[in-house]
Length: 460
Ligand SMILES: Cc1ncc(COP(=O)(O)O)c(C=O)c1O
Image (cartoon, rainbow, N blue to C red; front, side, top):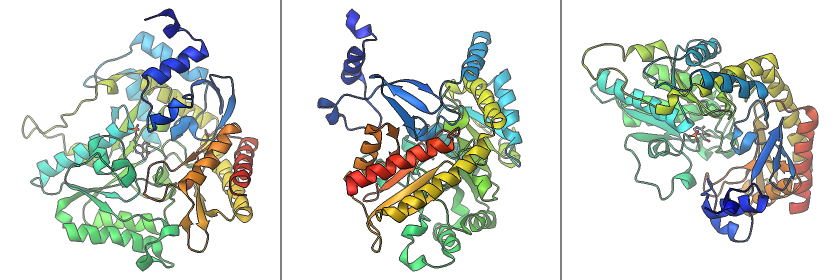
């Protein structure tokens, strides 16, 4: 290793990255002519790249994670103090911050009782799937083991979570997948299935789930795993009446309702959890990104006592949940999560998300008046999507290249926004916005002004 490879000299770092890093979700061919982008510092919702260029971050660290913003000294101190005292113990023992965070978290989740710690959203979802399968083996002769998932939803990048993945472009070339995961139709009102379109689309879309349950046989279906708002699939807010009906259907057929809050959890939509926007009561909730805002790796699979109790018998030596996540025992995660939760509460960031989300929505609707390429604006709190079309009447999606050019123009001008990325074939046409929950009115206006200018430059 020569001295240059350990240098902080920007060009050396860029070259080390180009030579050694395999970036996530990126076609590397581009780095033959472009430099990989390296991010070095963040404060509030501003980040600086290695060339010193400032950006307003409207995507919370690219993947909707940094809910409380960058540079939080109190979280760094909480993690530092904790890991100096006791950094790790495998999860079969308890630790102080894991107990304390579980207690604080469950205060926000009436009706839920137990927290299982892991490291990533995918892993938390895998835990839930394993719970469902083991319940099936223990209590239903192995029969009630199917897990339903929804077209356009995403639950992670592992083979089992991709087996529950409704984004075909993410899944392509990684099969075959795990058996007994069954897809139900999406509920995107703007793209309503023609046979369901109408005033009661929400109820009809939910009844499509019931049809799948009846086709598969209710005694074979253990759980329904859904995002409260389909996130990466396009910030698809559910239609009116959808969730009430979904909950009713789950109860009717004794099917566990597993809500994936990996994106919507911890205030993103203006309530602690996305499901709380819709008055439903899940049996299992998984969460990750905003739990510690990316200051430490942590995810949680939270269950009711009714789920937990099914593993508490000593009928045989295999009857308990025989699962482990080594790094679920890192104490930095819950220490960071405790302080993250305090910040969300003390700074009323849920309220801010709701208020600024209204402003973001209003600004995007105003842009829709001006730019005919904006077909549908939707969102909840500081999580929003603007679906772009080539033609408002036919709703033909705007070409992905043009959508990417709008995102690229914003980036060039110092505002990082997102878009649906390798999700649904032909439908990578939604601009996505999820700034840290500390965003001010001026920040929100800066984001939408950048989009306005970019759309004018790219589309005329
Ligand atoms: C809804 C949802 N669930 C699960 C995951 C997977 O989380 P992770 O990347 O932490 O495994 C993601 C990631 O974007 C997600 O959006």
